[in-house]
Length: 68
Image (tube, rainbow, N blue to C red; front, top):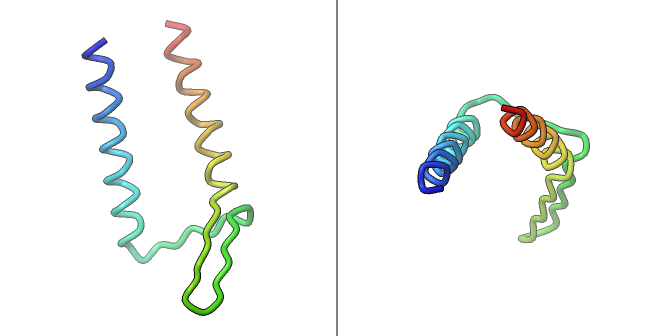
């Protein structure tokens, strides 16, 4: 179990680093299902579309690993 936790942790760190680099780059990602609201000093961002895409991707990955 320890090896699995370490592997999952390393994968999460790599995903976080990729997301951080993507955020710092000049590329922009505009998903139409990601809602954002900005008024004055208040900004609300709700990544519904990104959450759905990530959920589907992780479900497929976990399904493949479970099959082995």
